Image 1 (spheres, rainbow, N blue to C red):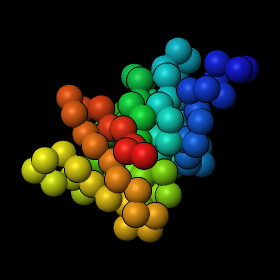
Image 2 (cartoon, rainbow, N blue to C red):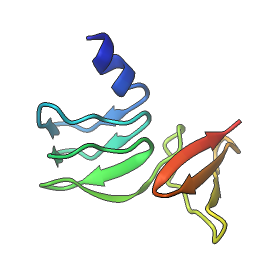
Image 3 (cartoon, rainbow, N blue to C red):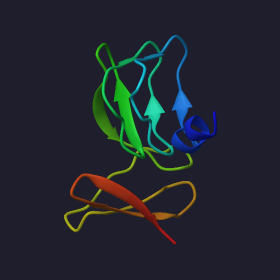
Length: 93
């Protein structure tokens, strides 16, 4: 159970979503309602559908992130800054 909590820190999983056993869910990931997750979901990713496909990135406050040409994004609600590099998103302090 401790492993699951670490993987699911801050994640949002929609109603009737199915996570196939063994797939890691990254921190603050968003899984759409009814999604069927068949592969690992990166931190801050937004995935929807059957089978789940990534359609974007989300902030820790649930706002969709829009990255600029330098790979930077700012959450409209919190003002937190995020950086994307090699398809990995991190929150800047």
